[in-house]
Length: 384
Image (cartoon, one colour):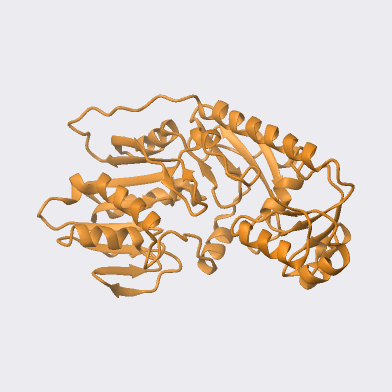
């Protein structure tokens, strides 16, 4: 852990000094830091990314659409997720009396459209930096919160809170919550990363998921916001890579529920994150052994997965890389990394180095890329 990164790091929930877990160097991307640390607060059972500049992240999200699940025409898998969330909210929305519902970070409104079809008696509004402003199929959308609107009976934060830089400032959204209103939060369940490993090395640690919650840290945060938990549920949904993704859902309000809350006790978050890291280290050593017989390799893709894999102890940390194949090879050849790596076009590389093994280090469509590489003439293709 670089000493320069953590002396000023304090827990976003309780402001206590945070301990460093790991440091990552990632691909250069406008507005986002290329070097981050993941720090933790044992008192809050919480982990977070630093540094994180709120203005820079706001600029990034204003230009980037990240929620690929909230689409106008969701797939059967994506719709299943929205239906599950609608089931969680059914006790609140089944009442005949009209309610106002707000979804912050709504993407293209997949959840809101599902709720509107199931409970048309209510009004629905979504806010997202990339939202198309206007009303569509009974749901209105905007790019920013309007403080002048009347209070909402339900505010939804579905996989939004992980991305919030300033949790204290963000609590101002509660000014839009009615006195008897409810807040629905769904986030990645950081205590179960190890139970749902992804193909990509250290996948769950990146620059966009700033906050890593457990139910305990969420309870602490919501208590600080003046709310009480009404219920919690663990909700594992099929993600865009075809694998299950761990999540927890919590409903909170300004008033205590008549039904006693049951929180399922799990291992402390810090121990759970270390279990995840140990599993990743074990997988990395397997890759190192697998690739050790090759004096040089080629790598396809120069994104964050490449950098995580090249980090100390990572699956590609000990490999000699002849060249990196990337569609942006011309631009990369003039970039800051040109002194460390050679960048080449796919077909140029196939003509010159088809006998060299290629490791595909991208997040999505890796199988399609591997097939293209094989068709181009590469004899050995591995998907990292």
